[in-house]
Image (tube, rainbow, N blue to C red; front, side, top):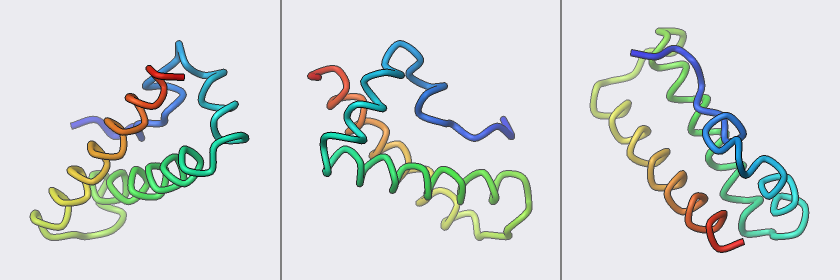
Length: 79
């Protein structure tokens, strides 16, 4: 189990400039990125034991993170 947060710029280094531009210009992308950041930090706290969570809650948070990441990846590919 990795204890490093999955930051967008690290997951998509080839899109670092696009991520920044879309955050500034596209309200929908910006909202998705903010949601991703929040759920990503929550998953990280669960994984490191900083914040206790049931297995089902942690699993649901991971699924939400993956859904957001997939949507962000699709937007980056189209940009």
